[in-house]
Amino acid sequence: MKTHILISSHSKANDIWYITNYFLMKYWKGDVEIYLGANGEDRKEFVPNSWRYINNGEDVSFSKSLMSYLRAIDEEYFILMLDDFIILEEVNTKKIEKAFDFIKSNNGVYLRLVPNPKGEKRVDNDFSKIDVESKVPYVTSLQMAIWKKDFLMQLLSYDFSPWEFELKAGKTKESMENRDKFFVTNYNFIKYTHFVEKGKFYPYLKDILKKEGLILNSTREFLSEEELKNMQDSCLKKSIRNLLPSRYINFIRKLIGKEPL
Image (cartoon, rainbow, N blue to C red):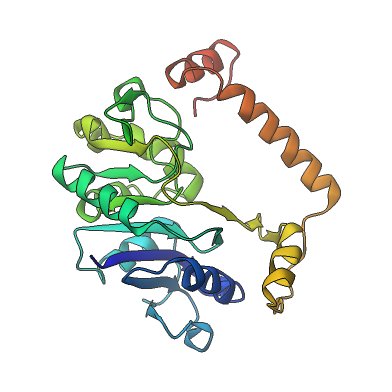
């Protein structure tokens, strides 16, 4: 089975495409077709040879650009990933095929390939349903996931930013109408991490690239120790929050006067 992957990006991120591609080529051994959606200035000279480049002009917004990339893909189901994801170990393509078979057989609209966050209603050993009806946080997380193209295009019509998309797209009328069609794996079907935060590199990228013999060809800054400390504090809070059942998180946030996730 040929797997179709859309990498959502923009022209200003051309300095990291070769890094993402290196690890994709190293660890994804199956038949795969990779699309790069990157509106803005034409940067085809930086596009890896194995990627199909989609550039439709001005990068107006996250949603509008992503919508334009989807029009170039004929597949009903595909994997969406962000441009700063590094795959960390060989992909079990049999697991990926199993995920595609599962979402298609259940007429699903979304299947997250990592349990981040995890599901609430276990289906079997491999998959769970996301409790959309309870408005749990991050129903439409931008972690690597299989999407039904037509449904994703409906959500993009709201023109959400990436942050808004993760928080609000799973609470729309369209998502509620398809509440039984959101799924997540019970364990990692693919192992990866991201290496850019707020436009800056994580320091660990230096060691990863050195180990692979890759030269860092970018003028981006690295996150400072203070920035990393603040992020670690945020991750600790997130880890504590994840100990609670998802359906209670927004209820508690409401009690303490915070916006729902």
